Image (cartoon, rainbow, N blue to C red):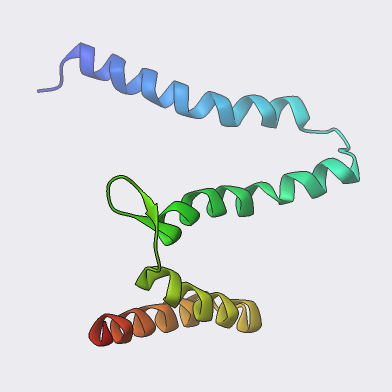
Length: 106
């Protein structure tokens, strides 16, 4: 049985998650944004992805130190494949195959 405190907690979490998405949408809807701002906003997903991937690809262990990791070795040809083909499924398959092969070799 769900208690009232849990329902209130879930409602609060939903509100905190939803409001940061809703407020900019309401504030910016119907407005013409400058081209430089649209170009700048287009770079945010790549910056976030880079910030998430760089530590995992370049460092390892505790404390984190730079090292040549299998993930980094595999990411380079997978990135080139993705850039050339623009195929998400193909990139995932190439990355998985290369990672499997490099783990067999190392």
